[in-house]
Amino acid sequence: MTLKFSRAIALLIIVFACGSATAAVPGVTIRSVKGDFDDVRERVVMALEGRGLVLNYTAHISNMLERTGKDIGRGRQIYGTAELLEFCSAALSRAMMEADPRNIVFCPYAIAVYTLPDDPAKVYVSYRRPPAVGSGPSMKALRDVGKLLDDIVRDALK
Image 1 (cartoon, rainbow, N blue to C red):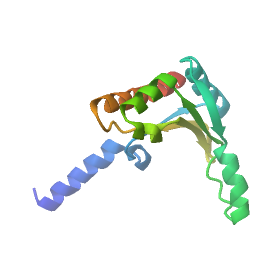
Image 2 (cartoon, rainbow, N blue to C red; image 1 turned 90 degrees about the horizontal axis):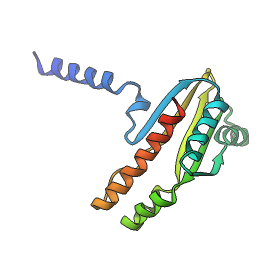
Image 3 (cartoon, one colour; image 1 turned 30 degrees about the horizontal axis):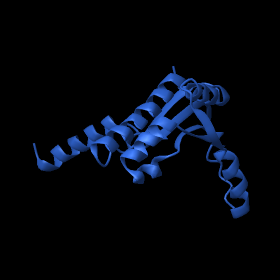
């Protein structure tokens, strides 16, 4: 087998293993489900509240982009509906920042819920997992935050 052929095979394996380009973004998890945006968003909120967490802020991303797009002459619709749900966990955030005060940049946590204009019946739920960096306690705390995000989205999409 030639070296060029071997590289081409390796590249194909990587492409098929990673799926779409969005799925290959390090630290970002994107899941999707067929359904209604409002229903999926509510299920994410219920999964948060079921853990005793409080939704701090909702960023209405699609509305903001539509409004500001008109102001700057950019009218392409990017999302059908898109919101970013921000929240925190007192216990996990405290452990994360006690382990390393620089971990403040990972708080608050956020989960995006959105649809695309050409397929409003497919709802995407995505989030950034904080990288497990720093000391042992910092790595553990950041992994715990990632697990919380994973669990919330898994429960919401059941």
